[in-house]
Image 1 (cartoon, rainbow, N blue to C red):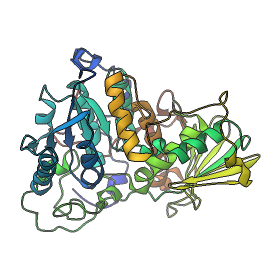
Image 2: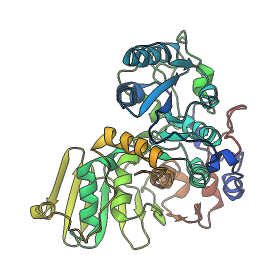
Image 3: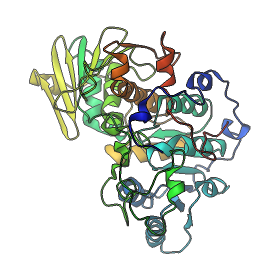
Image 4: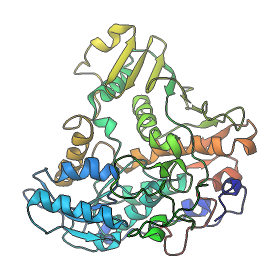
Length: 440
């Protein structure tokens, strides 16, 4: 594949997003909840797909300590990471029972596995989730939920129509300071919201990395999956056990840059605070020039503006004050806004079992038992990531837009009166044969 700016050109769109979004979804019976689910007092057998930094450093060590869970399989296209994952699981349980797979479909084919955690690179999320949904597995999928707008709509429709218990890995919703900040906003403590500033990184760029010698033990073609073929780079799939977060997320083919990486967290809090979990902005105003990588503005139906910018996490600005919230930090102006607790008769938002990652996973496990949807179900994850993708569309196509704003219909999931923009909902290249989105 060419790695120049042709990735973002006006090439003819293959597999039109408009057609994909208009097509009816055929949901198999297994997805509708006919499969047997774990008994209330039985272990939940979980398979782990993608043994990178997030799985290795967070999910795996916590899941093997949860009494309700038994990790029975790990899957990764890298031999070193796959074997290390198996060794860690076996070591935690004191046996050698954990199976290790290269192909995630072998995990999904196991009838004894109840649920999966997907922590692959972003460009694999939609495929794994749809296949897991077809297999009747409950799902925890890392954020950003998808790598483009079209995928988010398909997941929202398919998973949303099922009885699958789905948690998007937006764990900031489990954190008490983010929840409290949003409750204060929702209860009018700072008056009518005029602006929200969201400080996250820039949009992605086309992958232009030089070729390196392929790492032994890595199924590189499988790692690329639906993305175009290209030579190996350790920037995308680092050698050995991941001890830092890889930079594949900076490139269009595999991730959405800082806009989706941290945006999936902070724009999520903006949406939560605004009460927009089932909707989104109606207008996206691009930057003044294509060189700018901050400043995209999202306008909501009531006139509230959410701006990609600021200096501190998420800042809600109202007619009576402002609230700033970030990890481990909550401030307000006036300062006493955050000192008055939420009354019983005021708006209370979803409370997870405990703060951050641990509570977010526990919430998912509890809901697998209760069969109630958790804190961040598929629609919430899809609509949050849609905001991020809408921002990326405005940045990546700023030259074509020439300062003109995009009108967006969050109910119909389409740009209004702009056929060219609707083609930007999916990749500008065909998915490779064998890695298309599964039909469900």
